[in-house]
Image (cartoon, rainbow, N blue to C red):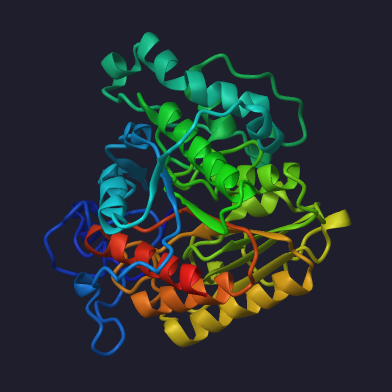
Length: 411
């Protein structure tokens, strides 16, 4: 999840100055980032103070919350961005901030599920690599040799390298890593697999609640997942929780599931999983990748699916600075599109990093905007599973999630 830095002074980048749009501010790992953003203006909408977002009261019938303490086990420590180790923002404290804002909701601990649906979404080679990489890295002594205790690629099997030849699978772990990881910012360490697997269990447990009769359920998934393709991970994501939830709803008998992604960045992984599928609709609104934003290659309006899935993908790229009005209109457009497409169940990839003070995007959405988005998607009246994606400004993270859930629950 990298950023555009055309305006940034190289020294500022190296020393962390201005990563959250506060040029000259002291670096702060909670409000700075090297994953998505270019240098951003400090101002949000008139009168907007994201640090002062109140936790809205829950709806009369609060949406149940599924979580797992194991999601705290992934500690990325830092990212490697443009060759520079940089404090990350996808931190374990995100779990606690969200839980703290949802205290009036019923909490359910995630129940362990088998790997069957995970293997429908992801290639077994990717799953095996993620499960074993951290232990293999430690066993092979990389920490002692290079001082790096997290698995990070340096070598990528790109078409330019292969050049039409048939490559031999590499023997070295640091070379194999680049076969599955497509950036240098998504590090694997002790606890990464356990946390990612627990996030999948949270999503599947939320599906169980909805299949069992709940109108909606929220899965506090960490790490997020919508950037993971069938074969590759990146963008601070390791397993695609939303895609697994959609497969579970399909397995439960829903003929067509809609995945609506409100994260600030396009969910290239989820799009890839369902690109040729007519039974799972994928709709996303996000900052325009043509303006220099992750995932760069994907998320353009021209991408609508292929083969049997032609027309089952809809992208709404938005300009930098987009605020509540046009953002909520894009959410409502995707809701109408899902309804017209015959969706019988809904998965919401609930990223709240489109908020005005989030360090990871240039969008300017407020808590009221998220509540209105919840009403728009909840108004579909579909069995709904909300899966946490991004959202990195700790002081306001929980309140933004609560605002969306309030809107969805009250719709």
